[in-house]
Image (cartoon, rainbow, N blue to C red; front, side, top):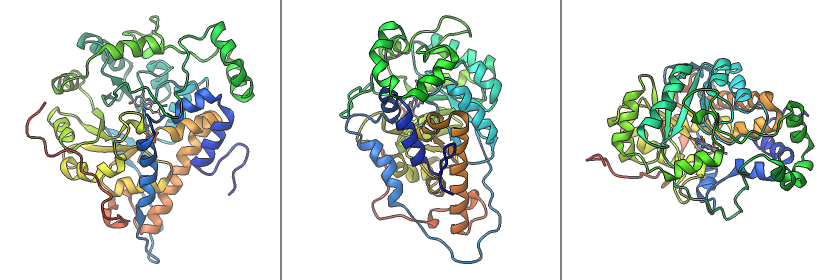
Length: 399
Ligand SMILES: Cc1cc2nc3c(=O)[nH]c(=O)nc-3n(C[C@H](O)[C@H](O)[C@H](O)COP(=O)(O)O)c2cc1C
């Protein structure tokens, strides 16, 4: 069925609508991609190198795609990845959480999100709180304690960030504060995007540039995005002892996000994590890192029987999800795909994206003659020679 005004048939169409509806600075902040964008490009294009080996008859009448991630039963192997700075839609993470709940799946909520964790958990109890390593252990403990009190279903620690700011295509401008000066500066691009502007005008407030989940208690004055980012920049990277320590503070499911190397995956196992996300931060971190799908098979082979392997980076269609699962992931997380859906049509747009992925997974399972995602194997794919990248040797000693 062709796209209509309120419904789009592909993630590519959601992206086109996001581009048309968002002020340029907001759209560019979503596309992101560090430096030359090599990793961002490879994340998406590597999926195109993987083929399928379809059957022609005897295909299953029904296909099963439910699974569980970090103790949460989900109706499809797609989870919302945490993303910060969602000046895309006034309902932001709450709309995303509602959409995920409506489609029976879980979500990661960024510590740089614009909505308080308590509001998000109220609409989707299957929410994992994501934190970067910011400040000292005491500060980390306080934020994590708030997430625990709020009832977060799990904790995600993201550590793959190198503060590399330069983007060859021009870094997006994120204002320090939403004041009169900012409004005047952004007025020309905002007025060209009336639908986005009206969505905010109806709420009576401009995009909120504070990060409410950085405080120890709900309702405390929240720092601005730049305030919190500044503190993060001053913080040294965590040691493996820190990772282990944080894992021990959290007595529920715990994910280390951003693992690309076999030795790091093994160290994560040693730190006692429940899950790892094979991820390069959607190509926003160290440019030149290979596509995360290339690193997945070696990591799955090394630690797939010891931790849950989640995958993210470059998922734009249901067949991408199927490819990642065939290569060893339990489920995938999506970033830009749902942000584009949110920009295109709020909560319904995120549901639309999840529905596109669901039906794409279903079609790929049908073509491959698999009645369940749990039966997918590398043999279902045509993997060209040299596709895989094994990053890092086996870990012998912890750093
Ligand atoms: C605009 C934007 C903001 C992001 N913010 C965060 C964040 O706050 N925390 C985090 O762990 N990852 C963050 N990520 C990375 C995503 O969680 C995810 O790893 C990545 O988007 C997956 O790639 P994809 O966008 O191709 O699906 C962000 C990604 C984007 C595009």
